[in-house]
Image 1 (cartoon, rainbow, N blue to C red):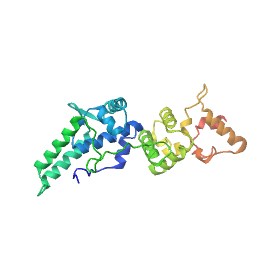
Image 2 (tube, rainbow, N blue to C red; image 1 turned 90 degrees about the vertical axis):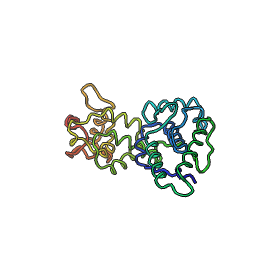
Image 3 (cartoon, helix red, strand yellow; image 1 turned 45 degrees about the vertical axis):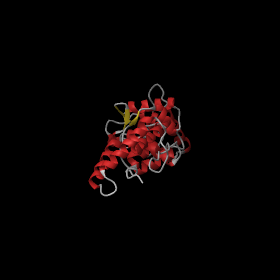
Image 4 (cartoon, rainbow, N blue to C red; image 1 turned 180 degrees about the vertical axis):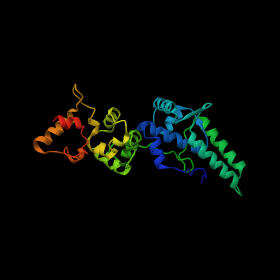
Length: 264
């Protein structure tokens, strides 16, 4: 077995670093990362070859590679594609192997095998899927599944200005996904007006449970929020109030803007 086949992998770091990628970008990214590890170094910038290994067209591979390069997720070194984290891991592995090489595997053998792999990469042929050069398949994530929600939640968590009670926020995010799409939620978050002092801002779980992405969605000319006005009207007339909207209007901790409560 190839001693370089075993590489340290940190799931949380991976999810955060790839959280803003599309499914297609994430798929080609893990493919290229695995190919760099299997090759023990940078690979040829050949979209046709990479596309065949990834199971997609060369046109799509070329477009995705360009997007990842523009985002800084991949780098170009000469005529080859590399990735900073891969290079660090490979350098540490080389140092370890060179310091512990004894008996059947020495530095010369390691360099010879590495050169053979470079010849394979530069030839443009597809990599054989053997146990020593296994290429990971693209990761498919979507809203609603466990991995998909975790990835999308990390994007929400990074964007939300008040970092507190992440566990409660994670559960509230899953509940919110039954009422709104991730894209619409992030749009509402970007449009939301938070107070200048973060101590007065709602906790992320309260913001999610209170459907606060609606606060800036529909407004009338004097700036009052229509969804909240409708909720307050229901409370005044029928004492109707959903728990996900937070505390009731008669509570000082109600999430509804105070001016709307007072005007109702």
